[in-house]
Image 1 (cartoon, rainbow, N blue to C red):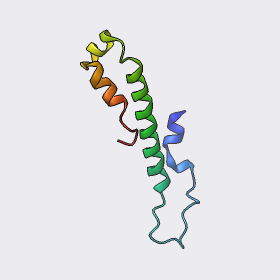
Image 2: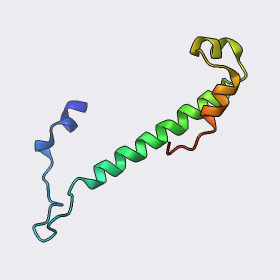
Image 3: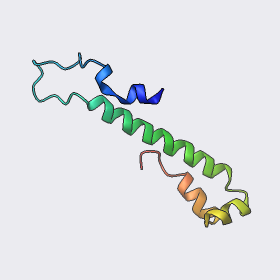
Image 4: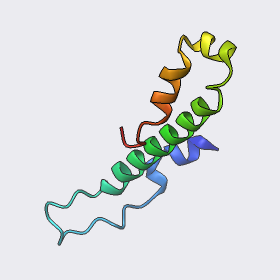
Length: 78
């Protein structure tokens, strides 16, 4: 099913306008990519915060509790 959506020939590019010169037509894709990256970082940092109390899992990651909490407390946009 994913191969159907990977082929862009199936989707007409109706949103391109000849009157908007200099406008980046795929800017919404870049915005979506940035939003997904920020969302993924938020989920990863929440998971890191959740395991910060388990020394065995932290040892597997090679982190101390302080390092894990420091990373988990960083803003999602960094």
